[in-house]
Image (cartoon, rainbow over all chains, first blue to last red; front, side, top):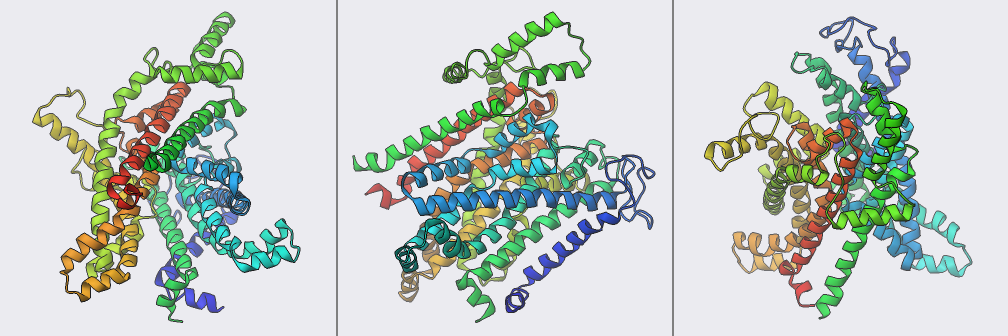
Length: 283
Length: 335
């Protein structure tokens, strides 16, 4: 509880926490949605916001408010899949490279370095193009997960490298602890804060990537996500025709989501870093 | 000699390996995925309403196999790819038949390079300068205001930020053209009006890349400078009565600059991806828009060409940056 109280002293944490709760609430209420999000023409088209349709309706004959709620839910699902799976890869690669050292370390770090250097966007586009007909929330999440681990594996590796030199490692090895229990029981607790703070950044990256793939039409355009919603609005010339409620909804939601996730991660990592925590909390 | 052995050779080896890995990945991806690019292309042509009789289809498949380098065993194909690469030949674009991919890339390249080079240089220099000053004077009100702005802009992906600028300038304040690289039908020439037109078209994409890139340099530089500031040599200079301007420019910012050069090398791939995305948003006639058209028409050969070319170009740029680094860092130079 004390941790939460300390975190809530940061205005950025409070704001981002509230925004994320609101968005999660939006994602949650989709189970009460009166409309099927994939069907067209369920409501009159191009209506301005009103009591009946709080965010108006689109040229596809869909209620923008409910579309947005589904979009937030689906975008969060994709990013959660991408984030969790790539965290698993990052932890395994980082721990193996950091603990094994030598050639294993060199090979794994070379791969992760290449991932950082090569313009990955193009590789993702290439892959997405080939599996376009298989695209759904899960495959898109997995596709992004394959490419999202490199930097975080490096962070975990350097953490392990420093832990390996500590005395308790020697104590554990001398008292007969195997490699796997040592890594899981002794090292994992140190890596967990890192895993969580990178998870948030990675989710944000995945949401952005999904939106970018949507402009190229490389995701399943029938599933409402922030990216596809914006793409439909663009392709129907919503801005030129003055349907601002349709095009601004995904943009504003996306900006809120990105800023909230970033502030949350900055706030948490500042709290986790003892030097900055002292400055902020005072004790 | 020591320098060559410990600095130059590891980097050259790394460079060759990365290019090798990248090209191999581009080679393997279409072969590992369940889709057959040829069947895919033919289905696409059919879906566009063309009738193909069986004999034509067979001939077509043969042509496509040749075109995509799919003849012979996997090893033959792989060697064939490298042979073509060394000739600088990426095959023929399928949907702009028979234009060569290398010609299309060459046509788009000046736009991308111009945009990327100017925005990267401006954002790096400006971001580091402002970040350095803001880090040194971190208690001043303007520094805190900039810090807040950076906190809002930093997390936005290239697509959303450019699109917001597009909405703002394209529909609310109509100051700048929102699409294209020059007025339609204008002939490239060294006249003042043509150059002004190109600059006006480039303004919004460049602004978006500069602000987003600059924000990252600003934030990291500010952090580094705040750390350097706490070092004892800065305290000593202050106590010794060295003028503040000299401390900032000669001691603090210069020391903080070095990690930023390394960071520029590491970020280049992402900056490049970002530039492609920004070009797509503003329909700027560079590689990004070429990629967009290639994806929309399913021109797989063109996409492969763009990808391989970009991997080679970016890794080469990073290598050059790495080789220039000793000029800035005396510790590497004299090792």
